[in-house]
Length: 412
Image (cartoon, rainbow, N blue to C red; front, top):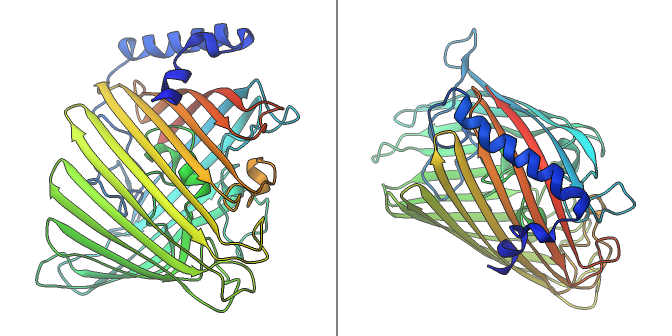
C-alpha cells in the first residue's frame, strides 16, 4: 500500500525529527530483550471493549476483586507525546483526535471500569460502567451529559438483563449508554492495534449510543445485535425520532469472522426528516502470528441545513486495513492504512476539535506503523510513525504531514 510505504521511508522525515526518533526507536527495540518477558501476545483491553467486534474475544484481563463478591474492577492509565512538522499554528495536529495537540506531553486517560457479569444460563442481571478522566474524554463526549471541554466522561454505563435460551447463550437486553457496533477500533486505545485512532473511527462512525440493545448468540457461527438509540453520540436526543443500528456476526471457523452493520435515523438537531443511513463490513482473519482486518464503510445523509451543501444529499465511503504481527510475547508490530472519500464534506467538517477546515468535499487517508512493546509488567510502550495526506492544503499549507509519537499505558 502506497501510504504504508511512505511512512517507513526515513528520508520522508524532516531532519529535525529523524535523529530523535531513530534514538527513541532504538531504545524501545532493545528494551524487550533486557527486561522480564510477560505472558500473552496482545494488550488486554478493558472489560467489554471487544464484545461488539467481529473477531474472537481476547484473553481475559487481570482484575481486582472488590469487597462485593462478583464485582470486578479493571482499567488503564495512559499518557503520550506527539510531534508534527506541519501543525496548525504550532498547537494542533490537523485531523487527529487523541493525539491532536502538537509538541505536548498529554494526560490522555485514566479509565476505571466496574463490572458485574450476568449468567447467560439463567435469569440474571449485571451492569458495566467506565469512567474516563483525561484529555481524551473531551473529544468523545455525548450531547446532553458533561459540558463541552470537561476532561471527564462516562462512555459506558448500562444494565444487562439476561433471559436464558435453549442454546445456553441467553438473550441479553442492555439499557444505557453503550459502545457503538461499528468498526474495529474502540474508545480505549489500549485495545486497538495502533496508538492513534484511524480516520474511520474519527469520521465515519459514532462513538456511543444511548438506548436499548437486544443481543444473542444463536450458535458458534452466528450472532445478532439490534439497537434503538437516541442518536449518534446523544445522551439527550436532539430531535424527536430515534435511530436504529444492527449487526450480524458470522464465524465460519475459529480463524475467520465477518461483521456486517447497518444504521438508519435522523441525526441533526431539530430535524426529524433528514435521515443518515449506511452499511459497514469488517472482515478478520488470523494467520499464524499475524492477524488481518479489512473494514469498508458507506454512508449517506439526506439534504438538510446542517450540511456544508444543504441542497444535496451527502455521501461518503471509506476503506481501511490492519496487519499485526507478534515477533514475541513482548514485541509486536501493527500497520494500518485507511482512505476516506468525503464527497460533500459532511463528515470532515463536523467537528472543529479535529482541525480540518470547513469544506465541501475532500479525500484523505493515512498510513501508520506502531510498535507494541510489553517488556514491563502490565504496561505497553508504543512508539508510532504516521503519514497523512489530503486533497486539501490542510497541513500548514501543504497536502501531507508526518507525525511521530510515543504513548505509554499501564493496565490493571
